[in-house]
Image (cartoon, rainbow, N blue to C red):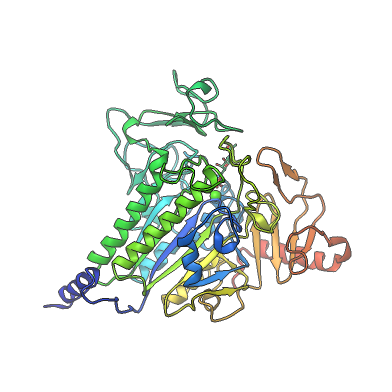
Length: 511
Ligand code: NG6
Ligand code: CA
């Protein structure tokens, strides 16, 4: 038996449980579960009472729960860009919330997180919401769609191209739209409807869920979306089945990695579509909470986490898998559909004690749940107040896999591995957050730049955190950000604005 055959036999034996618990390999498998629009207070291990999230809570019970963890942005695309590249998205123009027909916004010559792990021998996969653009120029959805995740380091990809509320409402697997009938090609427009296309605006009687703002264009599966679409009937997803489909693909990726990879570790990036709008959880979850579809979608997300955890367990991979769970931005209740989320919210506080939510420069926009589980390496049932940012997964995973980063790789990512594993209570010293403007968190202080952007979004009912003058909040005595103390500390304001401008002009922030 040669070495390869031996390893195959070993991994097959491990996969079928013959050896009992898998012997920890030098490098752990990594699973990053990235919820969509899930707020700091939306899961029970962060205080939610109206929804029960036993599987997500199990990550906290068996791992480390962070209280001061951040997405880099209060919306999806820039947060995801930062995770994938280790570069603050605001450094690159055009990285705001993307339409569904946008070109790929990550340069293919930039080192990405999956490429980093691939360099260290990982098998890499993405299953879930992408929202970083595809292709160059106009996308032909009826042939190979490239470049995309596969050109950025993912060996396997199964994605929702943009968001569940944006056309095209189809999955793309390794360059190709899934289940597409060549005789019924897909055409997409973000400008005008196709001739004879029914729209939410013109045909509200066809809708099973009506928009509250926007979302009045193409009708797919009784729900009107953003953008126009024709063709691709056989490829359209069924909203209520998205969680089942994505979690099944994740299960398959894990199982195949366990069976076929000859001991090679794997990295699974699982950007869930829950709990983004339109919230249409499977009927198994409908009515499971008192909060309507938004609460039920949290229950569905939790079930998906459980499905992934069970798959790891069944394949003897629990011990040697590092799991990170977080969310791409803070919560929003009414994000454009009449789904009863406002009416049924009750006493639930999606952002916990924090002010604002998705789209906001206040803490609710970017302060998110963040859990790390790695048995034997991270102490169970622990809590950390270290300042951590999702952008730091990049440099931290470089260290974890014994790699060093070149000067220009992941220029804003900081190695905080000791904090991520609970071995240090110190994370970052400071971080920059992006919403309408930039904010600098530095130790106990937070500064939000001044601007003439609106202070409130009437549609989403969000306090956006914008004001003409720079605002200063003391994060320890006033975590709720109710007392702007800029006028009392002009010296601190001046110093922090200078720091922010320096981070901007230097083009990088990792020392
Ligand atoms: C907004 C959408 C919102 C959501 C968001 C992106 C309207 C009126 N609102 O423009 O529903 O799709 O974009 O969300 O169209 S994110 O989580 O992907 O950033
Ligand atoms: Ca989001």
